[in-house]
Amino acid sequence: EKRRQNTIAARRSRQRKLQYVRDLESRVQSLAAERDALITKIEKLEERNEIFKELL
Image (cartoon, rainbow, N blue to C red; front, side, top):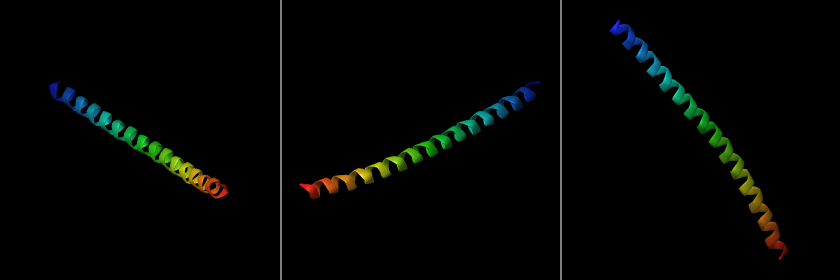
């Protein structure tokens, strides 16, 4: 009985760890997408800023 409970507990622990890693990977992907969008926005704003500087 003790061994069976230990096996179940170990399985649950591995599942929790796997889910935690999956959640982290998902978060990394979301943050990478957000970063890419912000980089694009910065580039566009820098271009616009240069145009305004030329107008002065």
